[in-house]
Each structure stands twice: as C-alpha cells, then as structure tokens.
Length: 171
Image 1 (cartoon, rainbow, N blue to C red):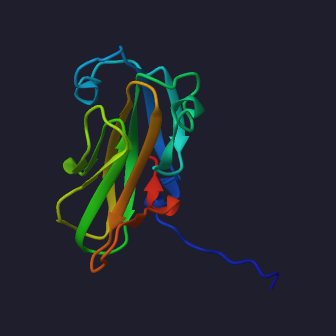
Image 2: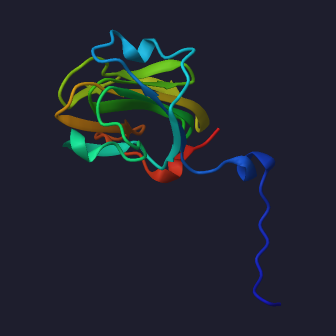
C-alpha cells in the first residue's frame, strides 16, 4: 500500500470545469436595450470568470478579465450553477450598470438599465438540487463605476450570501 486513493467519477463530473464562459461585446454609446440586442454579434474577447462577485469600483479600474474596455461593453456569462439542495431559492443582482440573470431559461433577477450600483432581489422560485443552466448578462454604460454581484438565498435561509466559486462550471 503506497497511500494511493482511487476515486470514481461519472463522465458528467469529469467533464465539468470550474468557472463560467464569458464573452465580451463592444457597445455603441447610449445603445438602447443592449442586453436584449446581443444576438448575432461577434464577441471581441473571451475569458473564464471564476465568480460573479465584482464589488463596485471606479470605471478606470476596469472589469476583471476584460482588456482595454471600461465603458460601453457587455459580457455574457454562460455555464452551469450547482444548487446544493432542492427548495425555494431567491437570487439577487447588484450591478452598475444593467444585468439580467436566468437559470434554466427562467429570469431569477433583473436589474437592467443605466444606473448606479443598484440591487434587485428576484422572486421565490423552486429548483431541484443539481446542475442548472446559468446565463447572466451584464453591461457597463457610461463611466463612473463598474460592479456586478450575483448572490443567492438558499432554501430555509434568511440572508443573501456570496455564491462560492465551487458552484460555477463551464458548459
């Protein structure tokens, strides 16, 4: 015995890599409804985001992972989120500027529009435990501040908490 431990995993577990796929799009200044008008566009950058917890910061500091853009861009985060238990969840977005989060095609929080760092707490929604498709869209409009925080309230909890990096997976 050399202390080797053998573990078995399903193909689904082996294929999952931590993080979310992020595609960055350039926007025209004051473009109306940018989060609804990204279809058919070609991203100008790609990166892997380990989480969606970017506290408010001055816009010249930029958004982590985005190179050379600090105004008028959008990011689409795609992947899966692991929900640890079945039950009623709530999700919140706190962003500057707009953001929309969807799980399995259901809007769980919507904080769209040009605004300062502002929070939206979505409705109570039942989800089963396990992996679920996640899509979060974010845009930064005119200068001053940048920020995006996506948080959850787990079943039977009273407060929103930071979603751990270990809950996010690439497609």
